[in-house]
Image 1 (cartoon, one colour):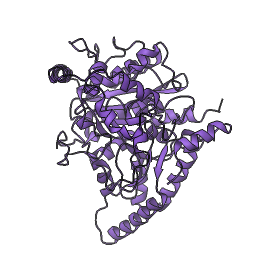
Image 2 (tube, one colour):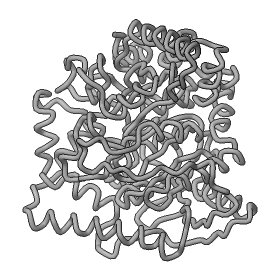
Image 3 (cartoon, helix red, strand yellow):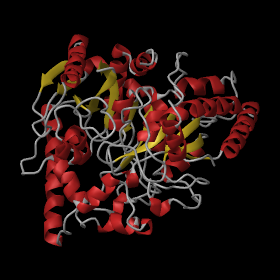
Image 4 (tube, one colour):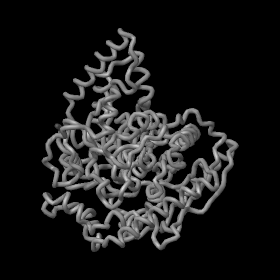
Length: 508
């Protein structure tokens, strides 16, 4: 195992400027393109794993995202993949879809042989996991090589990736800024063009917000599309019920579809995971899409001009493409609570008892923001009050889904967050600290989480020298529509090329 991100981060911060990992080299190929090269035997898996580990080492000296790794095991798996490829080619057998591809894994998903810490001192000495989470097992069975684990906030409960075990993770485009949370370590390595692709989790925006902040892409699947089995903390047992999803994170939209096809489907363990046929996004004609959009929300204190302009630009592109495009009002609950308030009312329904029990071995030592969440949890709800909020959340979900059906929208475009990545510990412009700590800047992400819809975050613009993404949401179980729309936005505006153009700036 390597040293923790916190140890390396402290050394970098205290010993002069950390190594600048902004590379002027050409961006590496997509995961899909790497697989084509592997299958054509233009490169072997060992070479790709060695090169990826080298890129990660360089990037991690700047972003501090790696929390656990076993290079020897990864290289042994690469050698096994190369041998398996040779055997299958020789015997004319089909190749597994991800054979020999290295992936990185958020430190909320169990990966056999590596510990799952989830950013809490309660698990700082946890032994290596004995088995994989379902999603990790599925990519491994498809031939992928899980390389390492990436940093998260304590119990994956923050928009800032920082904890008392591994320290603060930096944005690869500006180390003074956050990569977001809770899949911030994944997004940081992807945004540094170091990781090829990976797996994250998204409860209230934990894939989409970091992807937006780091200029990468991420997919939150439909609620129930992917099993949660093997993630920690196990949110299926918490008040938020089915909000959390395992999803792919990458630099290119095509790789989201590639990984989703592997990890989707019921596993017989997670009671919320279902088997619904997955449609091929490549068969969607983008010019036929029916598109709606909104660029602000009354529950968000302030949304930057650049963020709103990015949504308008995306909508204008679909108009030029010949699509039916309509501006709509944002989803607003008929009840007094916003999507954000509903999300946290359910998450804190037990008064924080579950989180306190999960972190009991930390002895009360918590990151300040996590401690604030515990302190603000309030009293546990009685059964009647809890069921009333569940009913309200279900009504919100039903209303948003009904609006899709009634208007026959294929996709809805909206901001991912109130603005681009802010400085560490500093609210976005125009949002007061207390409202930031109440997560009001993330209402856009919570709308689709409570509604349980599939949604892609894709970069389309730049504001203040940082990437700006848009959300592309689709009806339930129509990930194909969201991916197809995101892919044409990527082709039009550059996608990860936006990140690379910002990375190639001369350091200030």
